[in-house]
Length: 219
Image (spheres, rainbow, N blue to C red):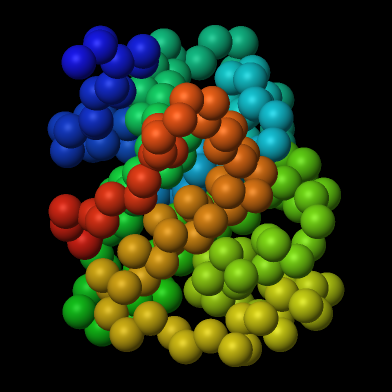
């Protein structure tokens, strides 16, 4: 077996996640950084753009959601942790492999949509900051976007009639596991549109497959 062309990204541990959140929380006012769940959804939105978004463009909307100027220097450890997650998600998306979104269970009364809402809000923030994906043909985007945006308040989508109509045709996920799997499935469906796989030139070689997740993604 030949050696892989790309070394697998090292997944962030629970300690890494806590450290990343602490570094985001430590950013000075008036900056309003994303939390780790929103940042995860945001990075997926960045990675689904049809053209690669460089660090100097994808980092600022994480550091401040309102677009204010960044500090002269951003903590190197914070950037390193975000870049590790960016790499991990990119490898999953390129390989059309399932991944565990950073979704965190709330109290027992929270609905699945309420629980995944921060992640979806981060994803929507990415598409606002980097709109190239939304300039692609609308029809193939509708189904996966509806699967994500059904968790948002419909009033936030008042100018998207076709998307709202698609959302109304969907049933809400029955539980958190289904909601989390829906996030991943929608991301991979969008990747098929914005980052299509290149045809294999060797006879008999199949492209990357979508393996089922080994766990629900619940944390």
